[in-house]
Image (cartoon, rainbow, N blue to C red; front, side):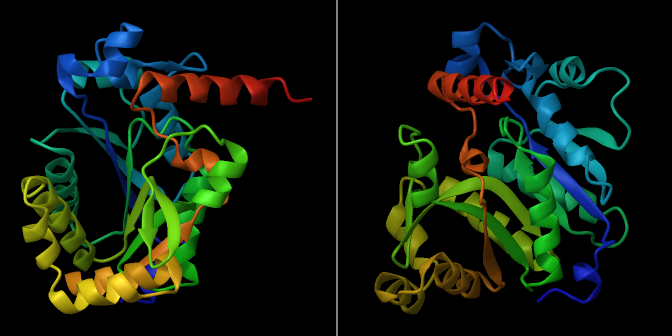
Length: 274
């Protein structure tokens, strides 16, 4: 569980931004003519710059590590010299490997600090979303907090938004690509993510790594995402809890051309409001 120090309003945080591209086969980069997805302009600002700006708006985040496969692209997006407190780290062979290596590198530099993990294509990330993630541990204890959005919220705001829905103990939710790692135990979730990528062609092997008891509890449980994450977290040896985003925009990452079009539409609509 988190310590009292972890829950203080003045807790010092670090952030990790996963910004590696899919290489020359990235459909979004090809469709928009940019050499790297992080350079994609969103409201006349590189997408990566928008993410970093939202993180820098909260003074509790003292260091931001951008994990990327093209340092020149990152510097083009963020400017040279880089903004204060921002550093670049090389990408690993996968998103999970990159996340684990970045958190490990930060953890080796002095005492453990909570880490907010997000992605470089979280184009509509706002300081309010960041603030919610940083404030939640002041009132609730867990090793790992996962931002989720309920399907009802998304469907009401953007009925045509395509998302991957998870049915967690009877509740349909989707990820918001925001994770708060409060203690070193949270890294067990990153290790599981790495295992999931390695075993994506062997789903039974991955499923049984949780244990039969945990699988049965998940299959027959009720209580929604909170209960499901409690079961999953216990199987991994950590305490996990959801943070429900009240903003549907928090669930939109820019993976495909249609995502980019929706982001532009949302921002255009916001600009036209009186």
